Length: 363
Length: 228
Image 1 (tube, helix red, strand yellow):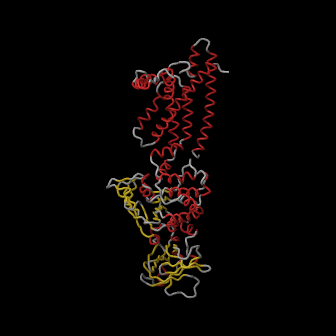
Image 2 (image 1 turned 135 degrees about the vertical axis):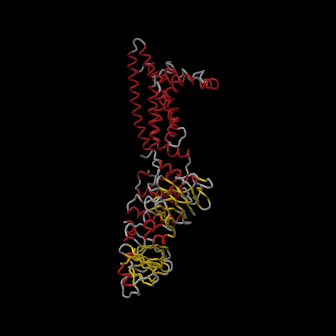
């Protein structure tokens, strides 16, 4: 597990960050540009030396100012996937992929397996300049993976691609996460990527960590997400696929059953839903004869007024939903924290993290 | 077509320039690489030393070489006593003098190529576990290949044309150190040598044209190799 506690002064900018990564899976380092995310990444990689603090992977210190430890980058065994891929232009795709493999101690990640997972078998003899942006990113990812890293750093790997390209590449990142078991530290300012890939979320602002925790919990706090528009405020719900009928998929999220448009997932598969606050209605009694497929009973946790509208947080067995209502509606229903209510939402408004979410969240 | 004397001057020139380039190029690559790295200690001194032949009069360079590599000079004496190797007034000495004079030109061509290598690639190589010399041979050198080709051509051409340092350190011995420019000079000094001087000059021009064409071809190949 990655643990970071560092201070760096860079001109006028001060970085003072402390956080823990997820033991496995993806830790998302999230925040606006200039928050210090990339500096943290560079410090973990060994490309930027902190003024003080400690960076450790499991029980091995990579950097420890008190103990005088500063392992050079080439000995940290941390893979780095760059925004601009940084493939070696004089080597073929295969030469790039094998560059790290040749220099790494024998490890579990095999050449054939990586090539197959990333679908780059037909590209092996090509030169980097002959690849599209998406192909370059896949090769860069493969190259980093094959260096048998103990941790993978990803620095906005999709930021230089357009929405269509990103939607095409994201599944590869998901298979990397599920197939290879290398923990990932993923820097992004895209809420869609974070919600889609993350297990744990660390939010940074102005060089400080302002929140960290399980992704669904952190991503359901709109004040941290800086979506730029209240229209994108919402809550992430973790669940598992309970079953399918002809047109809908039933997802069990804690005590809630949520019906979504049909998902291409096996029964029992984990799934994360993202539900926009503006799509959720509130009722005091269970509504009857209603078209909406989802009526979820819960208890009001908080009611927060924000310029012209009110965000109501409803929770049930550890899961939360957000509903955006008008102040009038709050008054008419006399909503108060602690009340039992019914959250109503249409199935079609529930996003099973298909391609639609990318546009919906990142505009 | 060419008289034996002309062939001799041509062969001597190619031999001197060839030896000089082969020995100076690796050293120039190393120095250029060190100079292209901002954290090299003593960069300023190294830079000044490497560029000195460019700003000194060639006669002075030849004289300094005599002082250092002459049979009684500090280095020359050691070479002579241990290896029975004499540099002053020999073909190898001519190569040394020509190589020293061409060295700064080679370093300049190489340094630009090393500096043009994206430092991000070096970071990528480090993150993949490549250490210092490994990175030099696997990343910096192949990507600077166009510069290496350019430096070899520029160096070779400069060695062919070097006059002052060669004649001072290695004298003007036909068949040994008398390269084309020295032969032209000797022809001009002798009565009725104008025709020979003209023919040798035309020969020099022909070699220059061939070298330029070769550098074009080489540079293109090297660029392909570097993936640009």
